[in-house]
Image 1 (cartoon, rainbow, N blue to C red):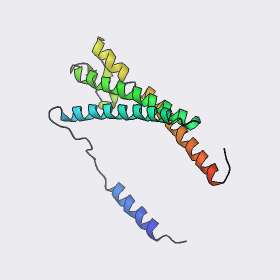
Image 2 (cartoon, one colour):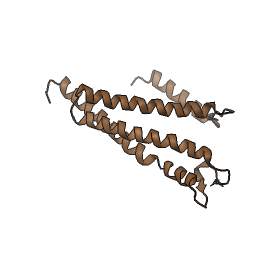
Image 3 (tube, one colour):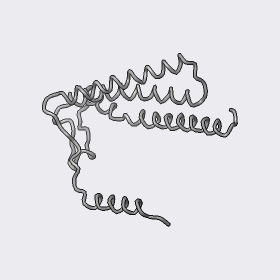
Image 4 (spheres, rainbow, N blue to C red):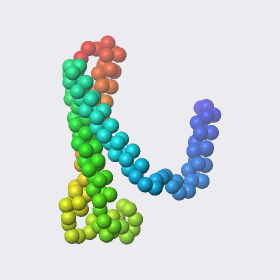
Length: 157
Protein backbone atom coordinates (compact mmCIF):
# COMPACT_ATOMS: atom_id res chain seq x y z
CA UNK A 1 0.00 0.00 0.00
CA UNK A 2 1.39 3.38 -1.02
CA UNK A 3 1.23 5.92 1.82
CA UNK A 4 3.51 8.72 0.55
CA UNK A 5 1.52 11.97 0.41
CA UNK A 6 -1.29 10.86 2.73
CA UNK A 7 1.08 10.12 5.59
CA UNK A 8 2.90 13.42 5.12
CA UNK A 9 -0.36 15.37 5.10
CA UNK A 10 -1.63 13.50 8.17
CA UNK A 11 1.57 14.26 10.09
CA UNK A 12 1.50 17.93 9.06
CA UNK A 13 -2.16 18.28 10.12
CA UNK A 14 -1.45 16.55 13.43
CA UNK A 15 1.41 18.95 14.16
CA UNK A 16 -0.75 21.97 13.36
CA UNK A 17 -3.55 20.73 15.61
CA UNK A 18 -1.17 19.80 18.43
CA UNK A 19 0.51 23.21 18.34
CA UNK A 20 -2.70 25.25 18.12
CA UNK A 21 -3.60 27.81 20.73
CA UNK A 22 -6.35 30.42 20.94
CA UNK A 23 -7.42 31.48 17.46
CA UNK A 24 -8.58 34.98 18.34
CA UNK A 25 -10.92 34.80 15.36
CA UNK A 26 -13.01 37.88 16.12
CA UNK A 27 -11.92 41.21 14.80
CA UNK A 28 -13.72 44.14 16.34
CA UNK A 29 -13.98 47.54 14.74
CA UNK A 30 -14.27 50.87 16.40
CA UNK A 31 -17.33 52.72 15.22
CA UNK A 32 -20.13 51.19 13.22
CA UNK A 33 -18.53 50.10 9.93
CA UNK A 34 -18.56 46.39 10.81
CA UNK A 35 -22.23 46.54 11.77
CA UNK A 36 -23.18 48.45 8.62
CA UNK A 37 -21.34 46.04 6.32
CA UNK A 38 -22.88 43.04 8.10
CA UNK A 39 -26.40 44.47 7.80
CA UNK A 40 -25.83 45.29 4.12
CA UNK A 41 -24.74 41.68 3.60
CA UNK A 42 -28.08 40.52 5.03
CA UNK A 43 -29.93 42.82 2.63
CA UNK A 44 -27.86 41.65 -0.35
CA UNK A 45 -28.34 37.96 0.52
CA UNK A 46 -32.08 38.52 0.96
CA UNK A 47 -32.25 40.16 -2.45
CA UNK A 48 -30.23 37.38 -4.11
CA UNK A 49 -32.55 34.73 -2.67
CA UNK A 50 -35.60 36.67 -3.84
CA UNK A 51 -34.12 36.88 -7.32
CA UNK A 52 -33.40 33.13 -7.29
CA UNK A 53 -37.04 32.35 -6.45
CA UNK A 54 -38.21 34.71 -9.19
CA UNK A 55 -35.82 33.17 -11.73
CA UNK A 56 -36.83 29.59 -10.87
CA UNK A 57 -40.51 30.44 -11.30
CA UNK A 58 -39.90 32.49 -14.47
CA UNK A 59 -37.90 29.68 -16.05
CA UNK A 60 -40.64 27.16 -15.35
CA UNK A 61 -38.37 24.61 -13.70
CA UNK A 62 -40.38 21.78 -12.25
CA UNK A 63 -39.71 18.87 -9.96
CA UNK A 64 -39.30 18.23 -6.28
CA UNK A 65 -35.77 19.64 -6.17
CA UNK A 66 -36.86 23.02 -7.50
CA UNK A 67 -39.68 23.18 -4.93
CA UNK A 68 -37.23 22.32 -2.16
CA UNK A 69 -34.85 25.00 -3.41
CA UNK A 70 -37.66 27.58 -3.37
CA UNK A 71 -38.54 26.62 0.22
CA UNK A 72 -34.87 26.98 1.15
CA UNK A 73 -34.91 30.48 -0.35
CA UNK A 74 -38.12 31.45 1.46
CA UNK A 75 -36.84 30.27 4.83
CA UNK A 76 -33.49 31.96 4.32
CA UNK A 77 -35.23 35.21 3.33
CA UNK A 78 -37.21 35.01 6.58
CA UNK A 79 -34.00 34.21 8.48
CA UNK A 80 -32.19 37.19 6.95
CA UNK A 81 -35.06 39.53 7.85
CA UNK A 82 -35.16 38.14 11.38
CA UNK A 83 -31.39 38.44 11.81
CA UNK A 84 -31.46 41.98 10.40
CA UNK A 85 -34.06 43.04 12.98
CA UNK A 86 -32.29 41.07 15.71
CA UNK A 87 -29.00 42.88 15.18
CA UNK A 88 -30.74 46.23 15.68
CA UNK A 89 -32.50 44.87 18.77
CA UNK A 90 -29.17 43.66 20.16
CA UNK A 91 -27.64 47.10 19.66
CA UNK A 92 -30.62 48.72 21.40
CA UNK A 93 -30.27 46.53 24.50
CA UNK A 94 -28.98 48.26 27.58
CA UNK A 95 -25.86 46.96 29.30
CA UNK A 96 -27.91 45.50 32.15
CA UNK A 97 -30.23 43.49 29.86
CA UNK A 98 -27.99 40.42 29.61
CA UNK A 99 -26.09 38.40 32.17
CA UNK A 100 -23.25 36.12 31.06
CA UNK A 101 -21.54 34.77 34.19
CA UNK A 102 -19.75 31.94 32.34
CA UNK A 103 -19.19 33.66 29.00
CA UNK A 104 -21.23 34.38 25.89
CA UNK A 105 -22.77 30.90 25.59
CA UNK A 106 -24.34 31.19 29.03
CA UNK A 107 -26.07 34.52 28.33
CA UNK A 108 -29.41 35.11 30.00
CA UNK A 109 -31.94 37.82 29.27
CA UNK A 110 -32.83 39.60 32.50
CA UNK A 111 -36.20 40.90 33.60
CA UNK A 112 -38.19 43.10 33.30
CA UNK A 113 -39.23 42.41 29.73
CA UNK A 114 -39.58 45.33 27.38
CA UNK A 115 -40.37 45.50 23.66
CA UNK A 116 -36.64 45.65 22.81
CA UNK A 117 -35.79 42.72 25.08
CA UNK A 118 -38.70 40.66 23.76
CA UNK A 119 -37.68 41.46 20.17
CA UNK A 120 -34.11 40.40 20.94
CA UNK A 121 -35.34 37.15 22.50
CA UNK A 122 -37.61 36.24 19.57
CA UNK A 123 -34.95 37.06 16.99
CA UNK A 124 -32.41 34.97 18.89
CA UNK A 125 -34.54 31.95 17.93
CA UNK A 126 -33.32 32.26 14.33
CA UNK A 127 -32.20 28.63 14.33
CA UNK A 128 -35.88 27.68 14.04
CA UNK A 129 -35.75 29.10 10.49
CA UNK A 130 -32.21 28.35 9.37
CA UNK A 131 -32.22 24.66 10.35
CA UNK A 132 -35.25 23.65 8.24
CA UNK A 133 -33.95 25.95 5.50
CA UNK A 134 -30.69 24.04 5.34
CA UNK A 135 -32.64 20.78 5.38
CA UNK A 136 -34.54 21.94 2.28
CA UNK A 137 -31.23 22.86 0.63
CA UNK A 138 -29.95 19.35 1.38
CA UNK A 139 -33.12 17.79 -0.07
CA UNK A 140 -32.85 19.93 -3.20
CA UNK A 141 -29.19 19.08 -3.74
CA UNK A 142 -29.88 15.38 -3.17
CA UNK A 143 -32.69 15.48 -5.74
CA UNK A 144 -30.49 17.27 -8.29
CA UNK A 145 -27.73 14.71 -7.72
CA UNK A 146 -30.08 11.77 -8.16
CA UNK A 147 -31.57 13.21 -11.35
CA UNK A 148 -28.07 13.74 -12.76
CA UNK A 149 -26.94 10.28 -11.68
CA UNK A 150 -29.86 8.58 -13.41
CA UNK A 151 -29.31 10.72 -16.52
CA UNK A 152 -25.67 9.58 -16.61
CA UNK A 153 -26.80 5.96 -16.56
CA UNK A 154 -29.04 6.57 -19.55
CA UNK A 155 -32.23 6.13 -17.57
CA UNK A 156 -34.85 8.80 -18.09
CA UNK A 157 -36.93 10.06 -15.23
